[in-house]
Image (cartoon, rainbow, N blue to C red; front, side, top):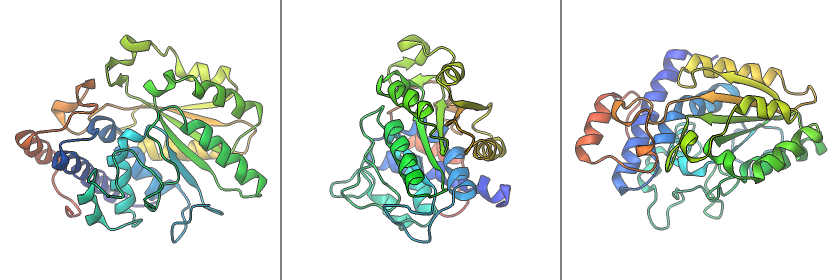
Length: 281
């Protein structure tokens, strides 16, 4: 296992990256990105088996699919910090002709990105297809995916969720970011989701929870536990409780920062709460 202290330093630096990226272009989605920072750092630096260079097919390695593509800032930061592309390319976020579009796409050829994920609700279907392809190819690697809780209001998810259990897609670990917020308010006010864990269980999935998805050690252990549940005939779901805007006090516990960016003064305050650890780009 990587040193937990080093991973925590990376978490703090990724938060700085997110804040600086969206501030520079006055555009982007910091709230959900900050809430999932621990997940991405753990997944890419502790959990997944990755190739030495990026290959779109990903044979013999674990795959990840981001379904709620608007949280691209955290995705790009972690990919860059993991060595998929130069860290200084984060400077091009959301600029014309950049490979780092607001929602990840594939035609720019950005290493690490295998699907476009601007339209919500599609990632579950793609992840299931990739997992089945691995089974057909006798590839024992695992497919991971991340989904917003509000995103589950898209009906396509539930067709895919039903399909996965009916077809014993047991090499898939789908994580639900349960922050209770979406663009127009809380998930309870917009369209209440009920008990997500029980719904997945009813659909035939093996379900685990991470009580504090902003506690790095809990995230690492939760992902390891989920990995141990693969290969047992059922797809695996993690319901991960997070706080939108985590790590920046004035952004936390509100949907207001779903797609809002900090001004100069707010950026300075936020960065002061997350001191530089590995060097800004």
